[in-house]
Image (tube, rainbow, N blue to C red):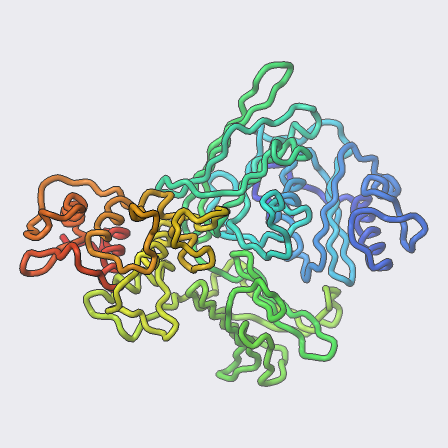
Length: 555
């Protein structure tokens, strides 16, 4: 647990009384098929109504005490990681006022963690606030499956059953609030990427959640990117004796460089072979029963033979050959992340393990990822012209384009305004969720795939509609319209004029010249731009890729 925390706090130490209190509650939950933190007197295994009561029953006179539960944790490591990833349950691990810890576990896989301190003095910390991820941390997860009770996203109408995947939660914690009535007042929170772009977040402040007067949760609305540095700032203060104490803090962290495997284990099945589970460092579990899993293909191989396969599409695991103890290669393909992973694992038989739905197999592997080989999955389309191939693959790799249902890209097809809005919103990572009751344009269908992207692109100032109040999502995009939206979206600047001889009467003459000055548009050999001509999907992709990445620009 101290390893998981990674914060500059005094380490927690195991305490036998806290350990007994934790295990007693784990036993109570199992005996009564119960959930939750409270026990009912008279039931089998009763040891105290509340966590405080149970601590006292085992001789622990707590000054402060707290309990966290991970229901159905298949392994201890998985259980602790699950508690720490969930922002409400992370709070006790960030609290320097706790000195002791104890854990309990039962056959249903419920992990009980109790934290306490018998002292009336707070723990040591160099700062007024504690944050996580910590400043300078470089191995932060990119996402979190928002399942927690209470659920911090409930303030936005999002609950566990929605299986919402968001960015990894960020915490700002004021530990002195645990002992005082000082109210934490939050004036502003902000999360930006390394380019200075503000990222939309769900923020849970004491104003939004009055029961949390010490904690600020900053949850990115979308998963973060691998190997990216992010910057957090929180403007906050408390009133102490009528005087304002500034607690504002700014810090940075970097996400994990690439996808990796964090846990591998089997779960026992009553009538079927034990099920292989793989956890990766973006918070996903690759398992056949998990509706929130990414799409995947897994295989266990040994000496050139396949022993076990599983895919998200089949919702079943196939045992090609019965497992025996030994060394295997685990291969995992994750199309959603465009990654292929391969790592050596050692499987041993251990009949003494007491895990959730205990398996007869134990799996050992290098948890630091040094033995894992990660390769990118590069997708190509059969109809890419040579002059646009690299740019389109770049856009596909960055999840800006996905191709057509028939497997082609549709390079020569004209692109519509709605399609262009979708590509631009992905390229600029706009928040396409919208709660508008009425569309901004009379011809927008709220059920259309492009609806959120059009609204977001218009709000950002990249697109505009027609004077008659329509947007024309199915109208083909013209080359001068393309010039306008790209120049605006990427805030192009420049001086001088272009060599195009057919743009003098175009309403987008200035923007077309900006594209030329910035190495995005070169026109034809005859020196024409054809501003009113329609633009194809391949042509638009080339222009967009050049705007996004200087490596594609024409010098």
